[in-house]
Amino acid sequence: MVKLAIFDVDYTLTKRETLAEFYLFMILKKPTLIRHLPFGVGSFLLYVLGIIDASRSKQNFIRFINGIKEEDMKIYVKEFYEKRMSKIIYRDAIDTMRKLKQQGCLIYLISASGDFYLNELYNIKEVDKIIGTKFRVENGVFRNKIEGLNNKGEEKVRRLMEVLKEDGHEVDFKNSYMFSDSMADLPLFKLVGHPYLINARKKKNNIEILRWR
Image (cartoon, rainbow, N blue to C red; front, side, top):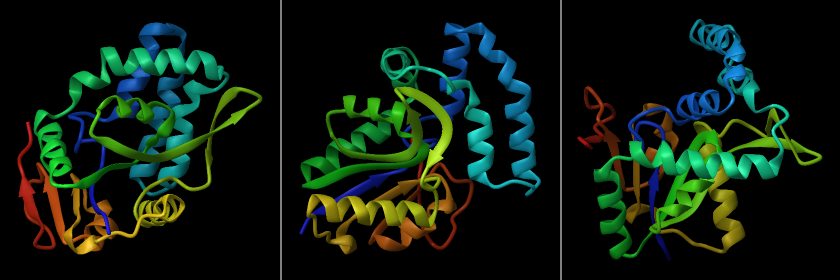
């Protein structure tokens, strides 16, 4: 049986929200994309007010990827990782990965963010698997439509189990780890024997808090 060390990404592995960071990066590359900002902010407010769900809000916000060719996206996300995303990763997160990797854990990143740019986190040599939200590609061109479900909450557990089955892994969950800043990951916290909240203001569900910098 294998042991897992599972990490959320936004505000757990990274100090900031990666989709917002990617949008800012893309505005610098293509300033005309700022035209999507009012609609994106409006969609976020509708989500906060409970008028639309997280999936709809995310699809609305990420409209700026519409029409980008796959080959161009590969160039963008590579540069995004090198110039922006790699600079906002918690050093304590990397140190924890290294420590748990040495103890025999497989390192899994599971996030609601888009896998088309999260996959650049394979640049972290300790990372074994990345599971993110999938976005549609039609005829080699990106669309702001989620394939399947937004990878959040219970969907993270479902996707994890699907990937583990595909890879033929039987997991010792009692001796596995989960790190996240949010109680939205309670389904994953419940799955493992060693759950940790990252930089939370107060303890919830008796989960130990770690302070990462």
